[in-house]
Every structure is written in structure tokens, then in C-alpha cells.
Length: 331
Image 1 (cartoon, rainbow, N blue to C red):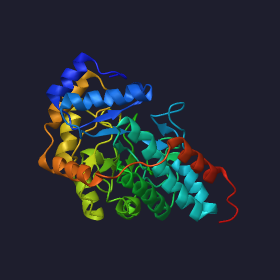
Image 2: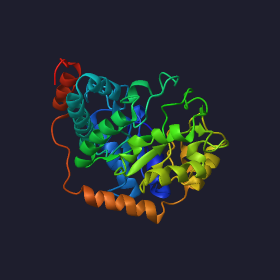
Image 3: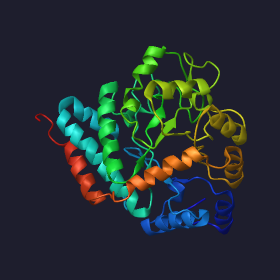
Image 4: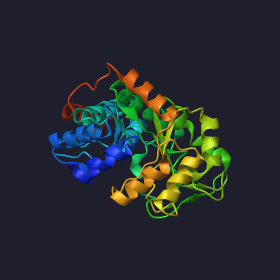
């Protein structure tokens, strides 16, 4: 799928009725064109509240880019600010959420795949998380991620903290291969602090990582043991959204991957390449949205009534950059 819905895609969406849609750079054109794509998708599935997701964290993970949308600093930059000026970093984390909301809502996106709630760890892959994380301190990640999420939710944007139960220890890129984490249960539990602070999120995104202390056989996305532990340890009652099921960390065809994730306890399957054969296989394997998913999303959309993103995205971005790049010698 590109920036305009084809007749074949419109027919597929109408017949398959997927729960929602996620956008990537290939789908993004001028704001008016992207807004039309989103409206056409919702028209095809016949649901005005069908969720539309986008990876928009700030920093290098941003599908909406200049010149139509502002560039925003990374979460890592805000975390570095915290070391010198905690109060300014807290203000910056809130501004990040406000700027993200003001960026995505005008085109009709109502779910941001953000914030990143991962805690950086020594020896981890330098790119896959890196400056996407606020800090290597779970308490700092929890505090700043919570402020970002609160601003997004207050503006009517559903959030998707990622990658539960924590991607910060992975030494491999899960886009290419399956990382294994051998740390103890106690260490893994420490990584849950940010997620415990983000239980108001409608979605959490799972990690394609094999945590040997929990399940030596299956990655978290496909492991009932891992996902049950995650919910029990955190008390999270929202929806678990898989990371992209096409990633190299997983084995088997897309149908088998989807079935494994849903059987493990994931609520929503995410398939991102956009090819029609893969779309059909994922939809068929996932089946129709269950009542729990429908109820959670309906409750969220009802609670969102009256909430609106306020402010101009470029103005908010300028304020945020001024905080992050300004003099932090004093509070």
C-alpha cells in the first residue's frame, strides 16, 4: 500500500475488516493526501473509530517528517537533559507528548506507537534502542515516559508503550534475528518499572526477544509464559499489540506467526510490509476482533470525547528544542 488506496486495497479492507491500520513512510505524502488515505480506510471498513497507528516517537523514529511536520528531539536527548536539569526534562517530556499529539491528530491518526519504555543496558545493540530510550535508570524512564504518555492521552491520542517486557538488554537487532536475554528474573523485573507507570495505555507493544529465565523456547510475543508473567507482574489489563510479525526474529510463515502470537495472549496482530498476500494471511490467522478488544477500544474512544490536541506542532517543537538545547546549568 502506498499513499493512495487502490481499488484492490479498498475491496480487501471492506471484506477483511481488520481492526486497524498502521502507517509507514511509504504511505506518507502531503498532509491532505495522508488524511484522505486514512479517511478512505475508515470508509472501507465502515468504522469511523477504526484505529490508525503510526510510529512517531521523536528522534530517528518518525514517519511524519519535515517539511510538512516538525522534527523532534529523541527521548534520549530528554533523558540527558534530566541529568543536568530534572525539572526542565520533565517539562520537555510533557512537551514531547503535546508536540507528538499536535503532529498526528490533524491527519486523523489516533494511536501513537510511543513512548519507548525500554531501559538501556550495557552491552545492548547500539542502534535498535539506543537514544530511543530515556535512560539506563528505570525510575527516570518511568517518570519521563509517564509524562509523555499523560500529554498524549490528554490530547486524545492513544499510546503504545514498547517493547514489553523490555528491549533494552537485547544484543541483536530483532528486525534481523532473534535476540536472547539471559539475565535473571530480578533483572527483568527491574525493567518493568516504566511499564507499571504506563498502565493507562490502551496498548502495549510486545518484544520479539527470547528471555531465557522465563521461556527458553519462544520469544515473548509468542510465549504464554512470558505474557502471563508480564500481566501478573504489572497488573496491565489493556491490549497487547505484537511488534511487526514480519521481523526476522520470528520463524515460520505469517499465518503461523500470527496464530502463535494470538494463542500466547496477544490481542492484536501487527503485520507491516503491506503486501496483499501477507495481509490476507495475517487477517485470516488472527480472525475477528474479540469482544475484549472491541470493548477496550470502545471505552477508550468514548473517554476520548472532548479531548483534543492543542497548539501548533511547529511551535511546540520549537519550545521543546529550546529546552533540550538551551542552557541547563541551572534549574
